[in-house]
Length: 550
Image 1: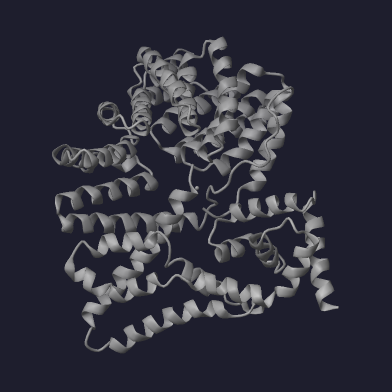
Image 2: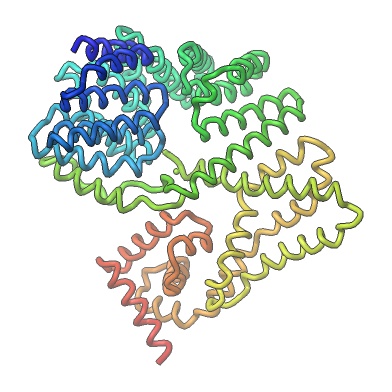
């Protein structure tokens, strides 16, 4: 048992390597003791997670799960499921964490074990925070904070305060958030956990940025970066991203170069996830552009694109966070029963499209990667074969213009042309800004992007599509408008699109919004019409369509 206690002691003291050493010693004495072995395997997974070795951590937890199943220990199983969920949350994969959290809560509820439910509810709150459902995450954090403090689990209490503060900032309660962060920093001092303290200072920096107190913000970011880099933490990379952007704004380019040199020559850079690395490289672009070093800016741009390509290929194989929690139930009375219902809604809501913690971040980055990859490739080819491939370039330009004109087709052709609509959508919006940024890096690049810029500027195809589609559905729109005069012209146009029975994803492309916005718009219109059930709404639309056919 002494080895187990020593392993836990060094984990609390933020020394995962020593913690692993003692747990391995404890494992040597576990032969013939299945309960003891299951416990050691479960505990040893925590320092590996601390080191961001999630694969090894999950491997140990799977072994522990098998041991607990063999001896029929529900409490041990529930604890393992909570640890597995904690790994997935740390990997920014909350959709994979949800089923394990649900199973853990169910087992603890059956055992009426309230104390052990607290870490599970903390993980559940982290999941809601990661997908951007801050109000409900706050409710869960407030409950777990009380539980941790009452049970004397102080390190968990201070860690929860940091995440709680993140949510408070996102709902505008900055003063409350600052008090919680300062309490967390003061309390974590006794545990010598520089990584958590650094994370708290980073959050304070974000808070001061919102208040435009840049002097104090710089002090917090500097403190956070120093603490996190001193313990070789991968969390130093996202802090470096925020710190660099502030230094560019303050025109402190010498310090910005020092930060870049420290990160690029570090080993903690390899511990950061792809999303944080891509943001850091993009911050470097701003630094180099401010310094007038276009070659280095372009090098960072290429690195950013490579990271995004890798990230996108990973996202094709796994579901990505793009959702909010389903309909919120009042979190009172029997809270455990409420949690079960909300978790079920949350699991059903997770879909395979882009997130949090984060759709507004992922979509522009994904579109940027696609356009920049295409642009850089075409530019190289253009320079190599300029004399002999003029006709190919002309065909490319003509093909792009032809794709924009395809939206003039009637509604019966919409489904057939959805891939072309998607291609047109990818050329619009925020991408123009990024294309212009990189075009300005060098006169040579700018000269080669004239044709692409002219195509991107032609963005009125959406209005032409709407005009044509509306004129082809005049009878349906007039019929529905007479029956429901409270609907606006825009609402009637949306109902006509619904009548096509296209998936939300396709409708979102036509309307230039995310799929979730389509769902919400449909819900609001159904409320306007006084229809309580979604199937009833489909029936009403179908009946109006039948009237026109008869």
